[in-house]
Length: 361
Image 1 (cartoon, rainbow, N blue to C red):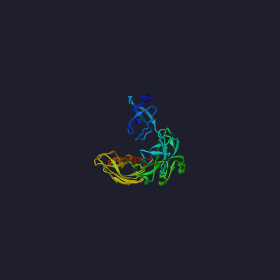
Image 2: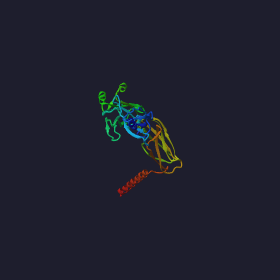
Image 3: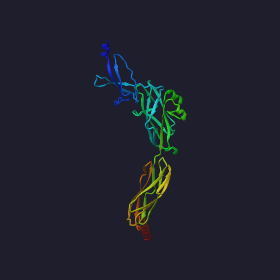
Image 4: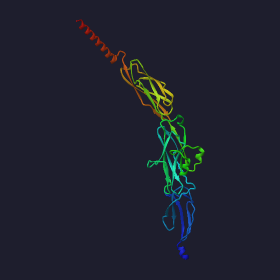
């Protein structure tokens, strides 16, 4: 019997635990040695995981075998409370008015049984709407289901910003929370359309998973230049004096708006004011523009352009170009209308003379 037992002994077994993705060692100690393992015997080994994984490989290195024996095992997660951990890589974002912002959500549940949890958004500004969405199916979600096989879920939270928002909220950090609650706690807290408004102390006492998020609303810079009469007629030696209007048609207050004028190189111009120090939302400012052609200019049509630009957050925004046509006439040149009017007068005089002569006969 002793000879049979000795024949069934395995000596010098090395055991290690590896990551299933890249076979790196993820435990301490890195390796354990079993000096002798007799027939039908068991040995307890203790390892400390250095990485949170759902599965791993057990590597058994026998002296008689050229390659280690690999065994894949799945780890069972347990939690004292049935809580879903909520996390997001992009928890703080900026968003322009009239657009939407998407937050990625990772929901991780440490439990064995199947359960369904309710999704809630806490203390989000009422003017902002939102929806939870499955990133794969694009379907809207108000609750999420976990099973033993699926303990991790990915969702998207889409927050929609309105076209208009009070100026006090712009460029300010709006703080809100996402909570994943079991049925009992969700019913206790209440809420309408997955939305809750709670004081800070009540948020801190929530048993379910809670994560803090930030949103910074940004107004959209947009300016427009209006020219009432874009066709100007002058005679040689005269200047063009005209009025334009600059209006802030965006959703944020603007500062240091610069007027731009594009004319022929031999023309001169002046624009007053050249820089508008501030322009609130929907505010407009009158602009005086003077175009001075050179003294030796010839008769004809000339083009100029009026525009404006502003820099916001290191980005330049321009209005649409407004084209101005300048008709230059000679000092003695009579307009077509004047010639036609004169011809009409002469024709009427001729008709009167002929009529008088005929009546005398």
